[in-house]
Image (cartoon, rainbow, N blue to C red; front, side, top):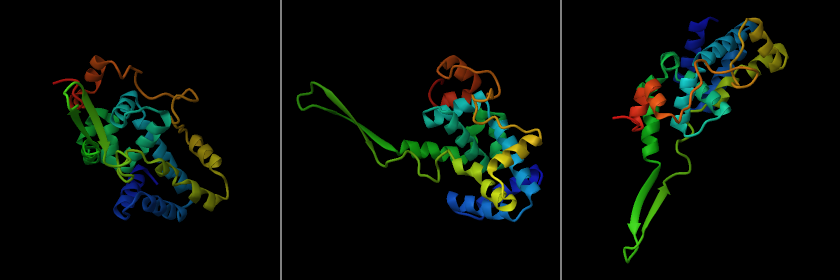
Length: 221
């Protein structure tokens, strides 16, 4: 399986299923019918795509959109990005500021706007103002829209065990034997995102590196 075959499988899994659990199951079933070499090929391709997306600038995008930062969360965010298909993944990996072009991200912003209702009321005598925030649902995004997809990275595990009788450590060894080492979990094992680390709270630097994201969040006109 080459990189074209990998992306065809990823995108076909989206076309033929309606939910994330069904998509994971579809991929597991398909991979279980392949040879050991093809399963390793898939894992190698996935690792290469994830490594391509592992950059400080994309981490800043993740941190901004989700409102928090964690190495695990960023990894699951990259999984989600890969699940969106080749065009989306490669576009955003190469230029994180272009993530605003993705319809899935536009939907996230729309869902965020509708997540809570803010209102301000004055006391009867007008001496103090009370601010209230009412959440209209428990989570910001429904599960199918959440920009994290942890299980998408694990679809080779069961098929590999099924075909070889070996545990997943052997699969990881096979990937490394191809000369590919995952950058995740990053900040461990001396693995770091690509590019120069920078302070995401530095507005001037944020605007310089991610001007479209900065404009969307009101950091610049």
